[in-house]
Length: 168
Picture 1 (tube, rainbow, N blue to C red):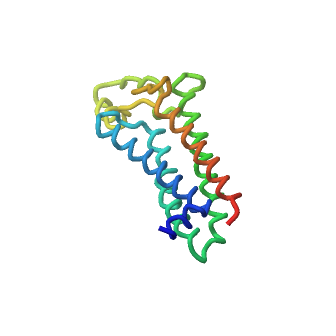
Picture 2 (cartoon, rainbow, N blue to C red; picture 1 turned 90 degrees about the horizontal axis):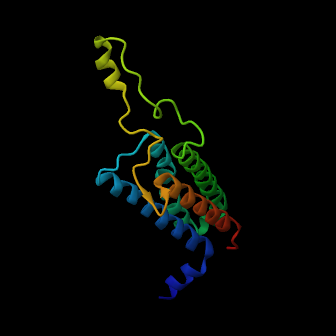
Picture 3 (cartoon, helix red, strand yellow; picture 1 turned 180 degrees about the vertical axis):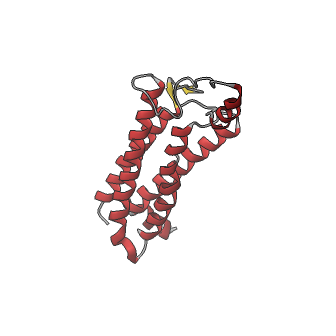
């Protein structure tokens, strides 16, 4: 019990563990929504990269903060902050596309033009995106999943900065 108390007294361990849990729960939530039929668009899939890198990095930093490798924890926390800050920006951009504040990538927004002739129909269907980036499939408390991702990622970035600044 004393060892667990010592771990929780280590702010970098605690912050890395919180980032790990929140990020893992967020990506798991995205997969659960997908399992229930909410298919991700191209921008949604790109926003997941931060979690694919951030979850294992946070776990490694939590582990490193308990031993002799504490010196790298500062750099790792800065890395986590940059990863999630960039993802917050991407999530905000995606939410703006959904609210039609600005245009999104041409590959996943707008109307697909019909083929000029029947021979081009198969080619058009093979390259058509099923899920448009500018159409919201689900809003929770007024925010789309991209909006929630922007908020969660911003909070994780701020938490990582706090972890970088924490005393060992």
